[in-house]
Length: 226
Image 1 (cartoon, rainbow, N blue to C red):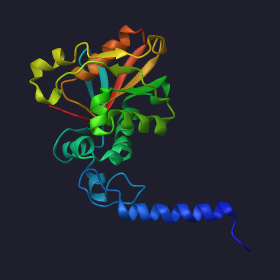
Image 2 (image 1 turned 45 degrees about the vertical axis):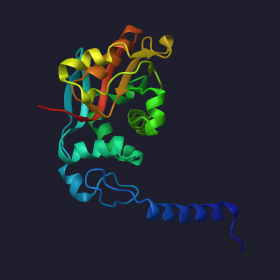
Image 3 (image 1 turned 135 degrees about the vertical axis):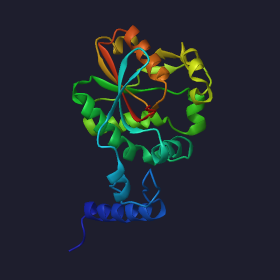
Image 4 (image 1 turned 180 degrees about the vertical axis):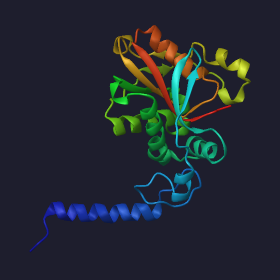
């Protein structure tokens, strides 16, 4: 009996997926070992992941959940993700971020999830916005809609290049709402990859609150903890 077209397409997809896995293997973000396509970390690194979420605050007293400390292999994972053209790390890093967010919030109660935006020029240069990739993964995992609520309309210096005392001024006024009506009365979960001083998340939250949202909470992968 000849194979149905749907069976043939399924077989071809399976062959394609195996080929892609061989050519571009999934890797553990923390140690770079090759892992299975459906894994988010190798067995060794999974065992070392922190058992509890970090609960911290951005500037302005905005709550933020974090899965990992910005140290050692976790810091290296974020650097590879952002600067090493490892956009495919987003699903793996989002797994731990979502877990931490669920520990701190009733995630499904949010009206939508959004992210810290990048300027179009910067996004074209990098090829992606790491915060958007994480936010979209969180949306897929939780069913909470993703929406682009903010835009970055002014150029500023990279936060990591500045002293702590300079960072609040550096982000002031660089973000604005895309559509004020879309945030009014909404409970919003704001996503970024890392929180250091909390100025960027705090400024984004300030703009959202000024637009009339009900509340803003934040979720990140890593946090600088002291």
